[in-house]
Length: 72
Image 1 (tube, rainbow, N blue to C red):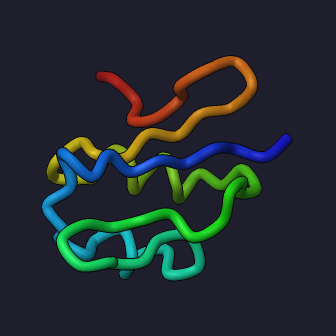
Image 2: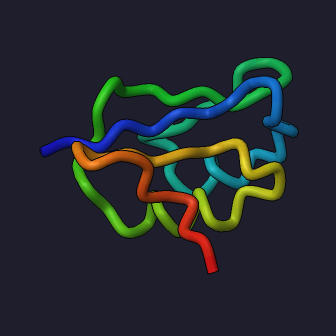
């Protein structure tokens, strides 16, 4: 089942970290990042990116709900 990845444009700082790490999933679009596909195949890298986002602007969800960023 595909995951849903979202970027909150109100929080995004456009650091480019996500687009650099996963250019097939994220792109910089002016003042914020955006997600390219509607659904993505599950990939641990996406959770790592959500964890590392300096603005905590990225969320990853599966059928059960939000799974990333992971909380300590």
